[in-house]
Image (cartoon, rainbow, N blue to C red):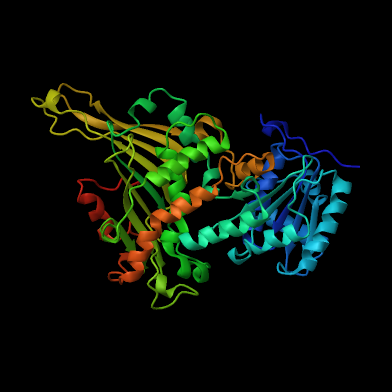
Length: 511
């Protein structure tokens, strides 16, 4: 008889549990499953958001048994769970874990999987619902769905659903993204495909829409009349670590811009959707992507900066140069940093620059959206001791400390008129308590509910790659300038500062 999900009244959620299903993880022996997916599912269980009628099937090439997989999961939870788990919760998980060893290219693997899933449906009353998570290498993103379709594991009926979660990278250029979309749609409907981006699981990312559309004080000034420019920073203090093989073929532009950063841009710049229905939100996001001013090859070189880190000091410790990292070509010209200036050609944002930057081995780990407002007229203060007016900033911090800050000028106490900058800070942990998360909880939960709002649609993916295609072409046709061109532990190449300085701007630093 099924045991009920452990009750933790201190962490009751207002959300409803997802419906019965089996979660099948391809690549279950990998790092993503161990560090992120299983701990995220544990957090959902703790919040009573998982169904009692649930099973998790791991599929990978390692010759494990069910017990081996269960032991691996227990060890992973002990090491990576965001909160300590009770023995009862671990036992609840173990009862629902199964493992299948097999080759992702072999039809026999999928035939055996079908048989196992049928048995699980009877044992756990999972109603034939399946969530297939592709935590495998990108080369299998089309192979696995095609094999599932061959044995009838993707077919939906009125009584059951079948969904496929595709990890990034979704292609490595416009042509490959289009081809992957075509291959997936040969065997799946668009409503079955969930292209995941874990950045959208972060609270502050989701709060962008709440901030803009639930507060009357922000929406009236969220346009070209009041905003001077917008900056988006996704900085990492670590280098490539063990990802040298992948990263040396990808680089900062492919790895971060068409997915993470463009998602942040669309949520920041989009028009109000008619509702929070998934397609209503994504319709507005894709309009922004298609409105980004096309870059000619000349402008692609003029309005972008690429960099690669050399040796330096990060966090007080010596850091090696990119070319000295494991599995990296000693003569590599792969960029580990990119900065860009973009314009959105629509009524709301015409003429307002959107600056973005992302890189490895930078000063600190921080992700931030900075909205700078236009300065107020100085005329009122011309006969006072105030010699200039600083601009106001709205800062949306995504990591490491999620929150929002509004910076404005106030009079310094005293007989003389002097102005000083003050910050009004909102931190999630201070107002709502600290609830450590992996970033995947909300996304997995939405997958099980069938809400695709936080997932990219095919046209969004292709529109994103279309924007960066001229940059990739321009960079491939010209040699990078003086790589390495920034020290590990710095904020990046000097040219990135000049990119803003030519318009009288500078980067908003987080520290």
